[in-house]
Length: 159
Ligand SMILES: [Zn+2]
Image (tube, protein in one colour):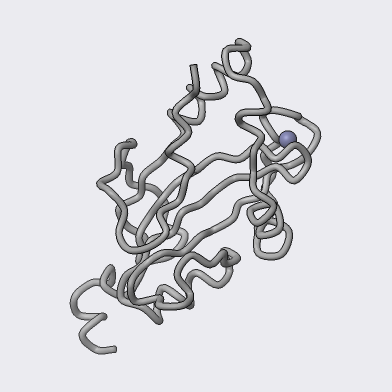
């Protein structure tokens, strides 16, 4: 049976469907961060299937060349080891989506650029994808919204 991998397929434009994952409040890395959806449960469930042999590594280690390259040039190296090959550390790639981004929509941006983007646009979504450059494992980590619309009313009015 083919596993449900639709969750790592990124939308090509506009707003995505309502989140199905667990919504949580977390320490904000960017001040306007909101509507965080954590995909850790789905990730764990998929990995359980891989470890038990019900899903082959070929099926989950299918990062596209674009994603692997995005990790190399725009990604952020994490401390987390790859859960599949265990030889490499995972990279996080931040994909940004939103109507206001125009031609920038769908681009991968390093985490350090997100605070600036968050002040430049009113609203856009960030999809964080983890990828192993060794074995091509990849999975959606989390999704959240950034942008000036998330500022307290008094601050956004003065800008
Ligand atoms: Zn790996």
